[in-house]
Image (tube, rainbow, N blue to C red; front, side):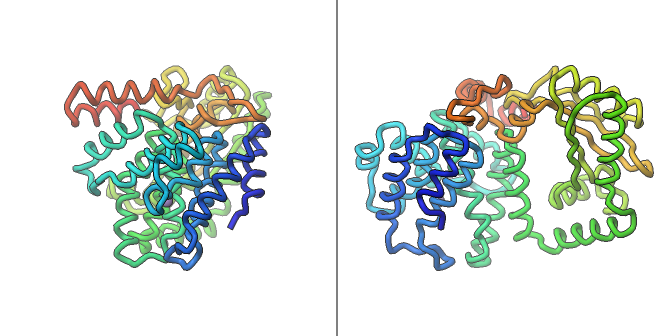
Length: 382
Ligand code: MN
């Protein structure tokens, strides 16, 4: 288990002015409250809230969120109460912990048909403070990472819920890495055969055509050098679940899928984004209908990027995303970018959306119209 000083060190990395005593106090309180409780894995229960707090340090979140993570199961699972948490840690943290508890008790139903209703409930729950959802998502992520010690039935149920509710929610909030990891963990439980077969296919492909990602990355770098633009290029194979989803949607065999590799070009400023797009389209043929400019038309969760698909080597399509460093931060952190700290101050990313306004927009629609319309709007917005 991460001890309290290690946890504080993780926070200090991005927030040197953290209130270390508050974290020490919450750590000691949580440990005392959960004393004697065990996880299914046999570990002390408190390892879980600590791991959730550690996940949130990766998102560089503020002290209130980290402390809430440490306390998130106390009101629900121990003799601790709202009043006591409020007396010890103040109103803000008590409200956050209470919000997470209420969310845990929310009856969410699995299944696409109920999705609109689930999202309505979730959006209502987070309309007060979005940090409640950030803690809940980190909670779910840690539970999914450690799902192997649960019974097979519970593994299946939790995985379906993750696929139907939490992964899409992370996506909607603009947290792509979280969405992908949740999907992968759920997919691993629900359809290990499909996941393994896709992974095997990638290995075969790599044997046949070599390291395609490396080759295309090098090709893109050559073009950037030719255009005298400085940028970082990252390439990767798409995740098994997104490949599998595409195979289902388009009813295609793996061998006929294109677009299995994605590339990201991260550059200095907006002007470079468009210059790079020019270089890419001059060098490779653009695939019709695949160009999207989310820089001039950002998504409401703050996402900005240029997307295009081009025919690369062997006529295989690859997807290319082009954005600046600041846009990239928002693309990874989503609405959480608003709370992120850098060197002790709120990292004022000009592209981060105000979570309050974002939620207000969504819930306004939700209160106005019927659910179908709400879902349509949410989908369009995202
Ligand atoms: Mn928990």
